[in-house]
Image (cartoon, rainbow, N blue to C red; front, side, top):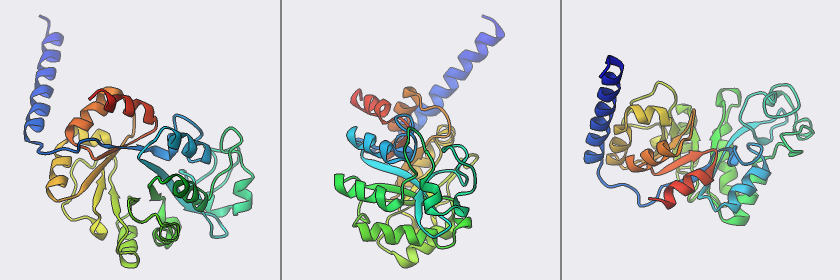
Length: 267
């Protein structure tokens, strides 16, 4: 056997031992993780549009995930990037365009950029909880609090989760909306999660690639009584989805809910 083959076998055995040890120690896991449509299911329709959210609802997902920013005239809108360049036929920064200017843009297949209220009305109509992210809150003072108030007006506090990468945003929301469930987002390079969460967040949302490096993120969070929702920075391969469900994730935030649903059906 050549050196390369020996190294491959050694790597496979090491990974099997590493993950096997975790699975032996993981403790109780959810009977079925939540299927959460990222940006409404970006693989199925133009991301963060009403068409995407409607398609996700048709697939009977458990939650709708979305990104929220604020227009120049103070309206909460659903869009991921701080500029409209990638996802629409326009150019410019979201926060420097009025709602009327944003609405004239094509966000894909003729779909406009929706307001948060429009998406929440759709969620209420179909009884689906939501997971809005306060996106780039440093550009929009008070954004988290505004989202929390919108959720309260829509009657969507219970079952929905407000998330952010920014600790100060979660602290701000906790102060004005103590009943609002919160989730702290963690990204690339964050292979460990501190035990205390800003705003006493009930959930964490680490990046899938970091959980693969350190699955004990899930076990430790569960021991603290926190929920764990996992988001993806790269490929949502069925094997990875299955592995994360076996690790004990409470929910997976995916671009293609159909693939996750097929994985869960085969458990």
